[in-house]
Length: 204
Image (cartoon, rainbow, N blue to C red):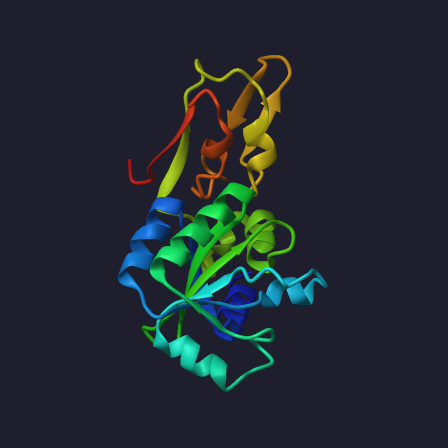
């Protein structure tokens, strides 16, 4: 197992982490330039890539991408920080998980990926392999906290979760949260009409 992990680790081009929307906005305010490009994962899964869901930030990747037009098929659309935040809010509403990536060979950041299970290769592996896959994509610095008493058992959060961290108990008529599986993306709280879900620092 250790040898397999080392082999994958050394061959993978970058590392990422799940980030909730509030962290997304903080990063965008610090970043620049910003653009949107077609998603490579979606192309590999034969999905439509007309919706540009990869949001590179910073000059390193954007300059590099110009030299590899096949990677950015469909072009590079530069956007403002305000446009980027509005775009990310729309992705959050749709239920896309936000992840932020860096190049492990340098201190440079690559940008955001906004995708869903099972289209996203990283999310798929994270869901199937769990914490073993931390070396490639880590959980957010937050975790979902569930107010059991306020939960009405509507099940909206169960459908929203991309990491199999929420199930529904017919006996209890409540949602059941597995905090060890929770990646802290925060998507579940956006559909909870009872306000029974909030994000808390994972360190607590």
